[in-house]
Length: 173
View 1 (spheres, one colour):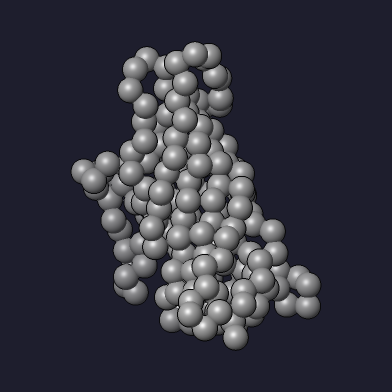
View 2 (tube, rainbow, N blue to C red):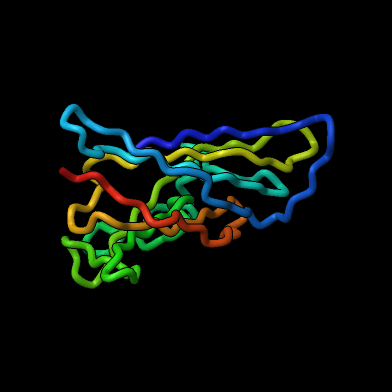
């Protein structure tokens, strides 16, 4: 998994956004291997944040950003990672949560950290794109049609709106 963040910060016009991050799905592109099978997806979404407090520094490991795990090793601190994805599959046209094959009491989800992207200067409003590469070890094999729901946290622990992809069809064979 790789995250790329493209931020736009303009000195020309002071843009005003809410302090709680706002996100929106932008695109999903599939990358195929030599056999013509989708082996990776590049998911891109836009963001806006009024105070620019997005992303975490490598040193952000103390509370509330510390890694707290349960007995299975799963992180139970939602703030340790600042981007969260939930995978859903379509069953007869209805999207449902998928149970994690390694833990029957948990849904299939992914969480990551992205680096601090706060702009320099007085005006901190920021907007841009975040690109997430979902690799082959993170691609479920059961259904061909799926979607991802996702949200982010800023450093003030504001949770963004929930965004989702449209129906995505994986080419498996």
